Length: 422
Length: 170
Ligand code: SF4
Image (cartoon, rainbow over all chains, first blue to last red; front, top):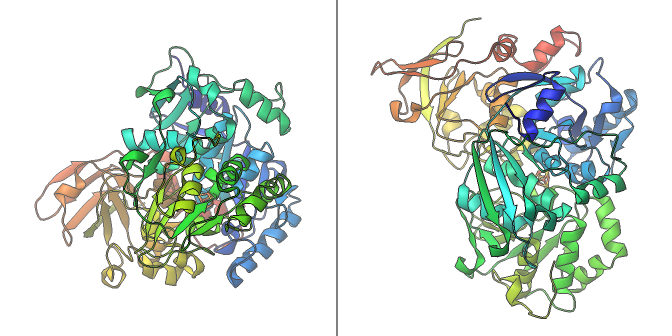
């Protein structure tokens, strides 16, 4: 029987000709990525590890250390990287949110299996990688043994048709899917179709990343010309990898078509994205206290470019805080070179160090009781970004930037008809 | 391995997130203190009432969210098992890897209320309400998973295999 993308990759890495839904398989893991938090609590330095060349350590969630325990974790991470000669060690200065660092260094490769401690590891699916988050204990085990087990879940396929309109981004596509179809618990997502060519790589990664919010196991994209060029520019050359395309007779739990031509900006109401995301025209014009552009999903260079273009020459509304967190130090430097950070700060935004920080309410930019936030990050759970009595709406960087200027949830397409958006 | 547990249950609803069980501010605390914040918003004071051996029952999509090791907190409080209509797969794996049995049983939230006593066998995959006698079947856990549970979690297993110094903190 034919296999989906993810079934093919798992079969290959399990040394099997075929796998099917429900089967438990033991796979070789090609890349294991550890994050700073793993070293902060309960870390025991292993006696031996499988292969240092297949390991990366990325400082991201709590850098520079906001607490003594995080600082001590940093020391343990450095000791580990030194003792085991981990070359792919992204310490403070080369740091960034792990999924961004994985992407910009070509660590997620087509047809391979990548494991990482963080739940948004499905981001790597944008590059045709079987990537998922596995929790600290299991990642530790993979570090030691180089293997782990997976149970093959059924796959839902999304077929894109038409062309992504200007002013609509990957975030809007994802929110449309989450709002319309709800959770995909214990399912994989697979994307493709003729409309895919109009969705740039940054938007694909936003979509893949947010698979976690609808509880998907994996969310994978095929390798087309756009993806091939992206990977080549990051040192993953065609010929060095084997992409996985689905078989024509692959079996899916559902196949759903998304007509890109018809899409408009979407917003999720507080609490969850699942069946709680709506076209922006249906959303109440709530005044907002804080607007946030950042995270592994939407702190990419393209996101900052869009936000900068919207706020250029204008001012953030009085009483609104606009926080912008570039997803990595590399994005930060590029955005600085391109003038985006200047535009943003001139308009009144605060540009922060590249870290997870505000996205998970751990350090900086927390919300107080009764506040309303509009975020382009990944999660709008109650209490996620600070007080459980704050409300978190979610939208694209364009919508967040436009709303920061007006002080309430605003459709970026209505801001200035002359303005060109990507 | 003894795979049968008989204990008092606590029932929570659908889509309980990891942020609701292990809030970001608790991530700055050592595990014993962090464990005092499970369900801090959902059921304030619950951690004072829960006893070692209790079972937590949940609805659909239990544990949606991040990879933070919530299971370590449940273990700290002595929770003996998790049973849900449906688990987020990352959360399920985390539970098993910390040696906490997690069983998927459709219909469980209708069959149990707070304070009921449940008898469950996670190897055979069934549960029973000792008062009403209602018995429900879930999926049996695969042998690979039972092996990890029998070892008390993945770290003790690695210690036994010589990857980590003994004794370890699970
Ligand atoms: S940016 Fe947010 S969602 Fe992404 S890895 Fe960091 S904490 Fe998680």
